[in-house]
Length: 164
Image (tube, rainbow, N blue to C red; front, side, top):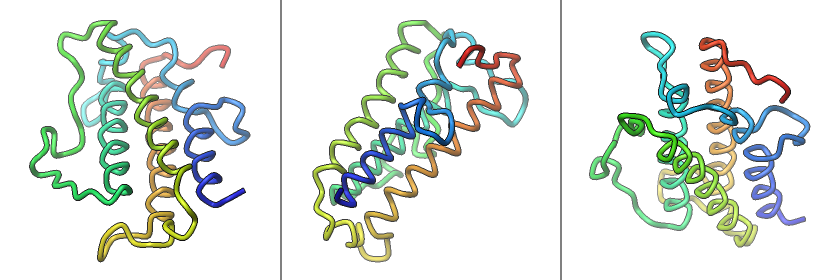
């Protein structure tokens, strides 16, 4: 298997496959939450699950563009801090839409990475930036970290994942 396909498989499997052999994927961590539960901030200084979902959407979209060689100036983007707020008031339709969008932007990244040739993965995204393979592994680590954050938020809310 090529390195590009291997990285794409990891991006997809660790994000969506609950049989990945390592840890709970984001798909399972957000499963079963209502919009109100997802928007709830459990304590001062913490995020809501929904805000973490929006953060993951934000960074996955930016990294997909950067990996494609596009320059992204975050200062000119809405929510340039990388933490877009959830819909207010929270609605089930908006929560479902953001959950689907999260899975969709990850799928776009998986498709992009799977089409790369291994030689391009060793190139830097731009001068002074990491190599493409390093950025992809960074996304995997980033997503894993925030999946754990979501699980911790659920614990704080008393919403452990029964039967998962």
